Amino acid sequence: MARQKPKVNATPAAGPQLIFNPRTVDLKEYEALARRARDAGFTHLYISQLSERTDFMGDNANSPWTEWSNIFPCIFKHVTPPGLEEAYGAAFVKRQMAWMKKKHAICEKLGMRAAYFGTEPLWLSERVYAKHPEWRGSRCDNSLRTTGLHFAPNTEHPEVREAYRRGVEMLVNACPLLDTFVFHSNDCGAGYPWTERLYVNPNGATGYEGRDMGHVVVNFLESIRAGAQAGGARDPRVFISAYGWFKPQETHLVVRSLKPGFGCVGTLRSEDANLVRECSLSHAGGWSLGGGAGMDPIISSFPQPMGMLYAAAAMRAGRVVRFDSGGVASDYFDALKLAREVPALDTPSARLAGLLHLARGLYGADVAEDVVAAWQTLERAETMASVSGAPTFYGPIMLRWLVRPLVARQERLTDDEKAYWVKYLYQSPESQAETYLDYLNCCGYSEVDNWYDASRIAIAIDGIEGTLKEAATQLKAASDKAQDRAGARRLLLDHYRVRAYRSIFLTIRHVVQVGSLIRLRDEDLAKRGARGEVMTSTRPERPDLPIGNMGSVGLFYLHRALRWELDNVNELIRIIRECPEPIFYTAIDEAHEGSLVLGPNLLEDLQRKARIMLKHWRDAEDGWYRPTLGG
Picture 1: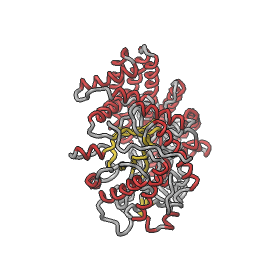
Picture 2: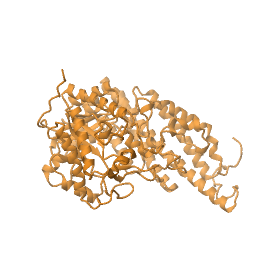
Picture 3: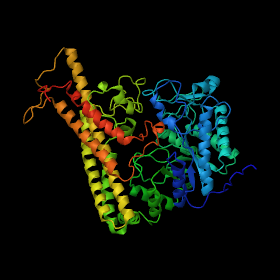
Picture 4: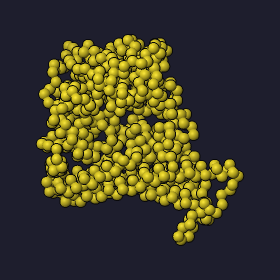
């Protein structure tokens, strides 16, 4: 007997519609998080996250730019409408659909609805364009970081729109609880034709330029919605990331073109209250460091009390009715339920009362004021971090600073010494032969240009790390004082998480210093070589230190930064060992590791980093004046 499709409500449930994305490829954990989400008032689950890295990453090998598009879902990774047979391998698509249907079954089991998060219009294989050359749209890759060329489909072409319409119809036929679609665009390998936000400047198919970008976007979204309706979804909603991913003048056109059923990620900036209410998808707060609905976090659970209070206040106000969040922190749901009990945040005293309410509910009344004091210290550190220019995500993760050894001459590392991290680096020798190992080069150019830039960031981090250390101390004292055992444990875990966060900032400080000193050394040696000079013990290489002579100023600072990072990595190892639960979000196995997520062997990688740094310690002396050749 054929299984009947689950019934879908004709109208949305009363109250806010909340979408949660459990960031896990473990089905049991997904269901456990889904249950917590439902009990906290969530109505939808994102079910589109891939179970594995995409099997097709481009016709040109070793193009690290595709890292983002490798991990993000897109419609044609789940279904294959006519004409897209060459986009992805049939076996891969079949596995992703099977995985999505398992999560859809959990939605059905829990009485929840389903949502789809993806990146569109995502670039397609040249194999597709060989058969359908007229489908080729905008070139959407970052030319500074890619090999080959990557083109998104032309969403203005009727056949392309029909392929998307048919694809979404197939999705909803397979997963009938789907009624919400959210797409990230103009980034990560996706781009609309002739939009100004493309990495290689506005481009696209001849004859399609000059069109109203609001109409271009909504034309595409209409194809998505029509496909969902054809599949049986009632009143489906489609959202696009407009703010920050289009130039302001184009964002204005997109917002102006919105109509019922379509919207933008974020709170719409409009005087039309009904438009804001119906066409916004806002953030439901978070309780982790980094990540969100579409990305993995860095630290799995991390207190974000004010963000949670503001998100709950927005839900309560009713100006916007749709919100989303994601992650793996179970504390998030407890914090959200408590935050939604707070009556108002319109005065400083009301905000303080809200924080105290959260702290009492999570940790116990006896330590509530101590916890709020620690949160306020943590907020000071976050404020300083927001203006510091310290890249807490793409440096420690995408450039692998956290596990990558800091050495003065990376060219002397053996293949074995590099093997555990270089394959996940957000660069490649094919795309950037001369600079792919540069500590400071993330997107094709240096994030720090000189010693002044490095010093500015380092000085800022001096204040940040000291403030984080203070917050961690306050949390530990509150944990020791708390009478409630569960609250004490939560505080102890937060104490370790804040200490780990501090270590991340210290690594950033040391990397920008070492990277800048390496650049200064190499530039100076090149100038001397061009002049035929030989390194001597005369000025300006020799510093005038108050006691003794330790060699060049650059060598002094280089050795100091290396020592600081060696001590820092050993401190981080100790933190990870002592903490009763994992601190960092890591891939479930090496097959799921990538440039945007740390691997499962984080502790061993940190230990290896320390060993390699010690082995290559004296490489720092080559290229600087040193007073003796001794030890």
